[in-house]
Length: 162
Image (cartoon, rainbow, N blue to C red; front, side, top):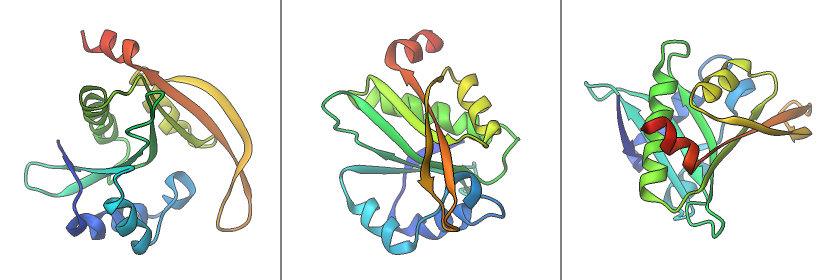
């Protein structure tokens, strides 16, 4: 898989990935104007993962690349085929990019407490569970969802790379 910065022409693929069956309950979604604005905002960085033939099979949204405390936030990630290892490969490339190209000390995220597959995938990459935000997310149906906080520190990433 190849990692590259997303471009406006990639928004259709991003929308398609966010709207795969069942994904809204796992990763959330945004409308086109939100993606267009965030893609143009220097406070965000969008990435896509491509196969050798150029098919986009993953995307991620990072935020806070210039955070003065070195905290880079993974706002959203989605892959076309969960369970095939694409997500882990994509996230490893994303982590390498973030720690090599920013002053990040801490790469963090939150995920729904019910998304155990994602939590296991993050743990395989070295993330630790940092806490829980009880009923912190209000979904489109008006239900409160609990979020699990996970993070990977630069020294932990470097140790895993060596």
